[in-house]
Length: 320
Ligand code: CP
Image 1: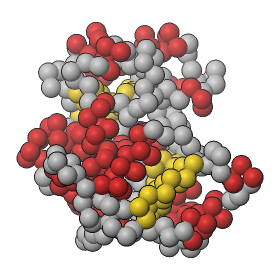
Image 2 (image 1 turned 90 degrees about the vertical axis):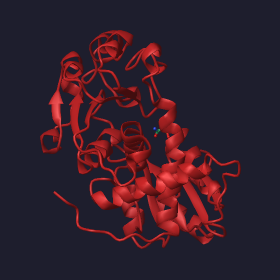
Image 3 (image 1 turned 180 degrees about the horizontal axis):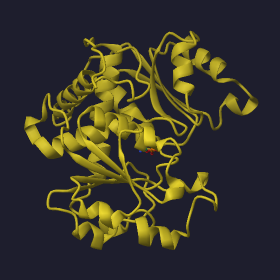
């Protein structure tokens, strides 16, 4: 694997390969000494043009646990504010010895530009680009679903037949897009639930069922409900009902959680708007995997860094 730019083009065998390596990495994280020498002498640059807590810190933790050096770059406070371009910024960091660049950018396609422009030779990992994709979030979500469903027997398994319902601001969500592609590649059935104004125009081309009624979606007995953050910063009045109406109609609260089938889990990529798309009771309920997803994110990002910078895996044609 040279770069990780999206899940739309990730093959089933590569996705399963990443999840299997992530399991190995998770096992090392149970040990007293968590650090592995694998990437000693390599440098990972975290190049973040948008805010992040989970993704940036877990990539940093993942790189450090593989003994890589880490350079954290945040556009805020950098020469980007003086007008420095993505090309010049990336080439400056490459000149400091970057072997891999983890990039989050507000523009959809920025990671692909970095990977294909010839500006740098480092491997590129997309840590979220505009409304396009957030592949490592989807991989950690798939890892969490697989672990919850198959436990220790998860190795080599896909998500065949698992029913996952993704709820909320689909329009602006790169997490939804990456999950739709990855989960369906792995055999899951994905249902999207949102107000009509928060459904993308091209959604009919996605391999997912669209619903507008959360209660009907819950009655269909999903194995997992993934709530999405309402991206208030990208919202305008044309898209959004009042917060009160949204939480009443599309929010997950304790009463709706109580109607989920036994064993069904509640997911959220974070950060959460408690009281809007998810109530505190639902977020903190025993069914919630929110913090488990964060923990799994470190193992999945260790696996991705390892496969990009040290490992070799065979690829095959995308199935289906
Ligand atoms: N889920 C996610 O991408 O969170 P951050 O924005 O905190 O990285």
